[in-house]
Length: 260
Image (cartoon, rainbow, N blue to C red; front, top):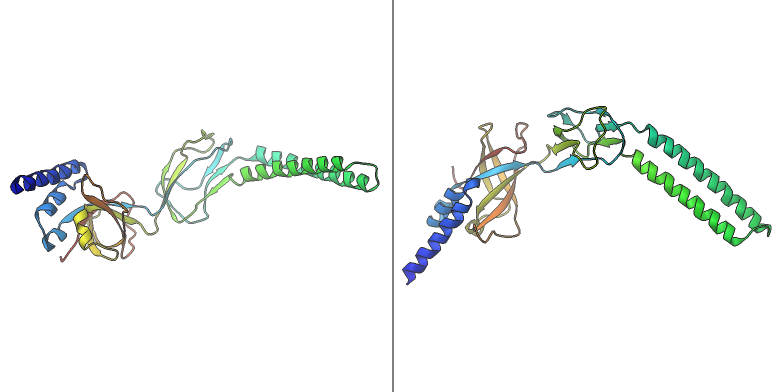
């Protein structure tokens, strides 16, 4: 009976490993299930490089793109202008709204003066104040629109994709440009949950990048909050011990734990 239970448990582990074949992890899981002790910790696992920050920039501004600051693949710094829009209409609307606000402010001042001379009513003063407040709010809305006439980079990084050209009118919600940060890229791994007996923050490992053939040292920074019950794996995140300019988001590689 005990032999049958052991056989069923082993079959379940192999089934979980088969489910992870698309991720190149089946061999690792199967071997880890069969190899107790330190030998399992030396098995290689696959990983992928992720950007620490990325963004798909869109705009609901009904204005034509006048300039694209950077081409695909080019580097930018925080604060650089990525996209510029033709906002002449919005600037004209702001001038009109500010003039309307000044008009309402004058009307409010007049209503207050008449009220002090018993030639007006408190209601007229409050109505004039409400109109002045509305005019000020209308002007502020247009200022908010104008602040989006130039989209600036939120961090240092590179342009991953450009999906619009100068002189085009962007569609609402459509991606215009995609950017990724080059600061502190992460390594994302999926490892057997049995490794939690020794794997922790600060654990160092070797990471061989497929695309460049270069080896880097990774350091585990955090573990996922949950174990996948089906595959008996857990997601692990790590940083590169030393920064390198040839590391790009999306690169993949092999992580090796234990002695070389």
